[in-house]
Image (cartoon, rainbow, N blue to C red; front, side, top):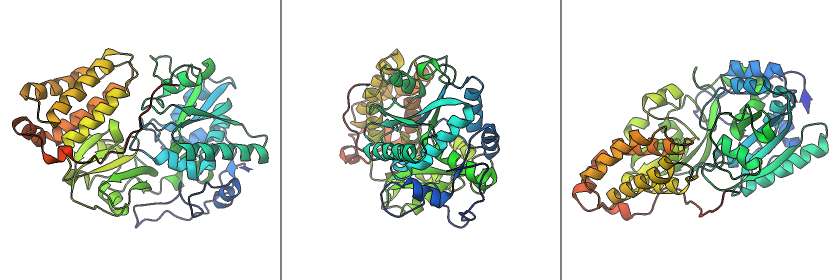
Length: 437
């Protein structure tokens, strides 16, 4: 199963004409999880981890795919520097974002790719063991990873063991400090930092928490090298990314895309539009609305997205139909985020409820000019004042809604709510959940 150095690339060069590339999700047809034999036959054995891999990750410029985009090699070094052979590695598949399916899809189809990355991390940073933290609702991924862990233990008993831990179905349960708190026996709520998990995490040990997709990329980069990874993407945002495309598209689902591809090219690869588009939500519920005409030609490069006030975040591209009401859809998101507060600080408990209530009044034609003024003021007042980043993501979404749907908001203030306010939502259904354990 182990190789002593990166293997030659048996997959051939990346396609250049098609913006969609298939590496993370390629393999045997069907919807079943890949077995270890299929995995190794397709990709070859993985190399043994070590300090060399952190140099390779630096050269690849791989950044985290969980939303923060932190350099992976640097993150590993911070844990390795503090580990005395007792560090903990966590593969994070909590994926509490309602609009995202990428991590659970990857886990349900390619569990060994994730476990390869986690095992490489254990060997590279000097860890004592590894956990896989999976959202309770993601049963297919959880079951596939559990079977994969048993298969590896049976065939390769000398490799590290993987413990599967369930995450409650809460939006913030996958936040790093919330994850540590949950595994340590507490509720899956964010805690005040510092110290950060890489310093004092699970059982008080240095803890490396890495998104599942990031670990899958690590498993491939370790085999084929940074040059292979950088064949696609851009200088600042190399490689590919898994994205969930949904809304007004013909074939919603998860795609692996070249980071140099434009938003429009990705939507075309999802079968194209089924109706005219009004706006695109990039990055999920903590993301940003961008007018459709503006978003279409924007590459999924971090610098280019930032120029448009956006980011790829958790990898969501949601297309809002022209016939939908962006004010109402934004109000629904804010109401959901207000309900997902951990209840630990005023900006979350009182601020998010006030934002959601005011935007709901605007959506239903019950607001006035003073409500709109308050929304603009609260965007700046609430940001960066919470115990965690939950209120920051909410006001980022709201700020973009105030810009993109400004005309609609004005019309809602002087007229009755538009017909689209009462239309069915294009947002994914959110399950009713309770509890933090």
